[in-house]
Image 1 (tube, rainbow, N blue to C red):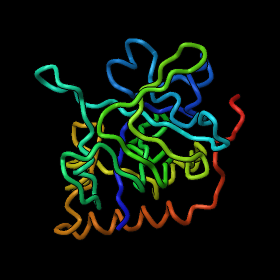
Image 2 (cartoon, helix red, strand yellow):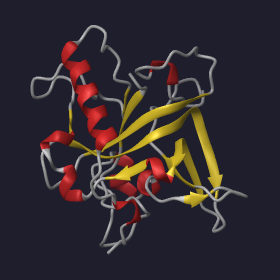
Image 3 (tube, one colour):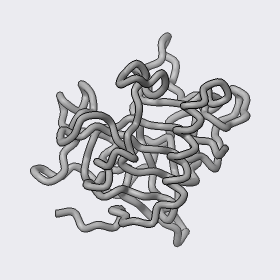
Length: 214
């Protein structure tokens, strides 16, 4: 099974920056509520690599704060399907499933994905010309990235489970990361991951990554 990880982020329509009255983040935790800001606001914007003709998307998810002043880390060795040691700094070829909860519908949904991402253990940073610094743990070529149209996200086929809710014994807990571990011993979880992975692989509908923001 291809490595897969799930990330819980604030809900937005376009993820191309915060636009007052058009696309503002919701359900993103205390920081988003207090500041009306979210680094994940740019998760489906894209940029061209320096000296390269390739467009990339870079993705942010809020990691849990580490104790004893240690740098927060994403435990890539825990990602379902990865065979890594704790000394590895990154891993390639991971499907990153972006999940969020809209105010328009109950429950969390898949909003999009990076299909062949590099995932970094520790936060990376990009400095843009306007002085903005973007933190990220995920990067993928634009051609591998899909942002689902809003109405498509609300389909039941894109439901994301929360452990202990609606009969699920797997899914997101308190963390913004779900590593989807346990498919060897949980047939229902294995079926969910396999079905979702197939939907992602075979998706041929509209992609909002190029949609005009309005």
